[in-house]
Each structure stands twice: as C-alpha cells, then as structure tokens.
Length: 133
Image (cartoon, rainbow, N blue to C red):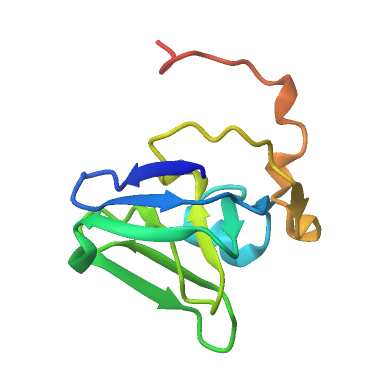
C-alpha cells in the first residue's frame, strides 16, 4: 500500500494518505483558476485511499461554491490547499500539498475550453532555476 505525507505552508496541518490514487487531473475550469490563482489546479483523486490528519485538523476549513459541486479545503492560518473529502466516497488531494514525491504523471487536462489564454505557449519562454536577478 502506498503512503504519502503532506502539510500546509505554515506547517500547522500535517496529514498522511494511505492507498493509491486513481487519477491525477490538471483542471483548467474557471473555478479552479480562481481558487488556485493559477492556470489550473493539479489534483489527485482516490475512491479507496484513507486520509489521516496528524496535526492541525482544527485549522482545516472548507468552502463550497454555492450552486455547484466545486469545493476546496484549506488551512485557516496560511490558506494552503489541503485534501478534501466533501464529495462522498472521493478523496481529492492537491498535488502541491504533498511532501512526498508524486510518482504518477497527470492522467489528463480537463475543462480545457476554459484554459487561460496565457497558458497556451509557455514552453517557449525562458526558464530559471530560481528567482531571476
């Protein structure tokens, strides 16, 4: 059985996920753009993995966008995205909150009709290993 550990940015919340992920989607919908502040969300999904909060469970809160199934869990202190169990029978884990390596490649890009205009040709721009000087 696979085990992953993760945490929030400030370190208040720590968790473990035991089990395998069924899929890994890069979602480009407008809701995911808004709640990540980026071009897309990168979420791992599992119907069988088990989530255990190791520390800071009281600092975890969730938001569901009224009239939709779109929801996210996050740390009340630093705002970091955290695993979500708001959809019955489904664990959603933001890939960026894991401290262990994600060994699977994304399954697919989804909701690409909403892709940010500036996200199309980014492979041709300069790359830096750190902040450019």
